[in-house]
Length: 433
Ligand SMILES: [Zn+2]
Ligand SMILES: [Zn+2]
Image (cartoon, rainbow, N blue to C red; front, side, top):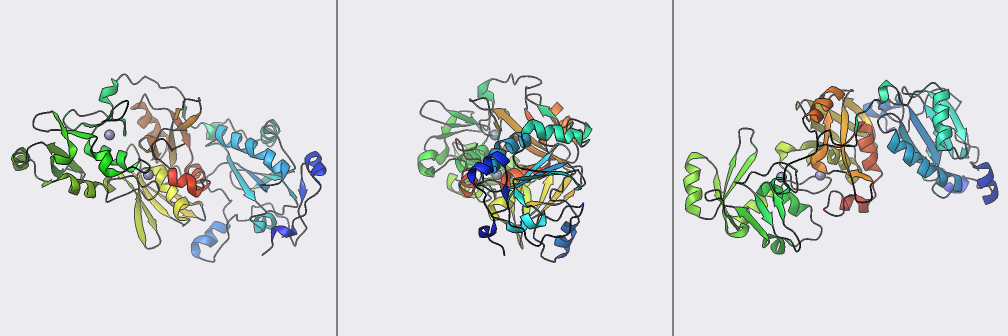
């Protein structure tokens, strides 16, 4: 193993002027036109398959920047890369490798000075490389020179920054958690200091509970009222009886009753078990998202396989996050948001190793926060689709939805760059950024 000690740093003045730092020459492999694998291979069948593929498996052009976190021109590159990544999501892969932390990569890519930017076409062929700081406009001009049209057809990812039609539902008819319509027969009300939260069902309440940071369940539960299925009036959640049944798809249904006799009566026409709040809570919290820890029904979830076991991702984006949280290769089985068709994603060392079907894409549901920045609109607004046509149909049925189409590789890349602290706060109410 080479160590960072082998890397030469030129004086700070030269660094700023020349915008580059020399790397000590090592035995570099003969120059070729193809991209060496970015991942360490282990000799397994999957790993050798990865050898022939570019570092980014999605069929997009890639800008790869090789630098280090403490080199000044490298630091200057960081915001440029970040902007390109955001503005050209779904059209250009933007990657960064720290060659001080990962000296083998410097050698693999024959990097002698940092920062070095390597331009790869969608097939992974190197088109051009540049040494030193490279500004955003210069990078874009270079792609144009190289004949890569970042605004062309392959780049026509769907972007919707303003709703096609505004959501005209009154606020008291919208579930705080899932944004779905509130059925007045299953509504849950959580009393807050200033305002109350309305939820569509006890299930959404438990998702809410599992999204709170450091909440004491006993304190929280005292604030909760559920709707009596028999009378429609609000009753304390902790003393109600619950008829816990199942719909035709095997998904749990929950009806609350103030009087146990009323639950028994309902049970005669609508089968299920009558349970108390304690048991309902333990059932509802028994399956958690392997990324964000939210309560989830397996019927609604993505299956995430890792090692010899499996877990669930509460949404498609969370499912990819499991690779980041566990630092492990995963296999995800997600369903197309429109048709339910299977989408299978395998990761290898934090990158996409295979995607079935290869046309599959992701929708990143976003909304503008108070500061005017685009942020995730939450787990209920994310999805994978076998192709763009399905995404378009799904969006047509959701005129109030905003966000953008991104590649599944980008979903994974966004999760892989999260720190353990960010992962611990992922999807938590008030913490999710
Ligand atoms: Zn809901
Ligand atoms: Zn989740």
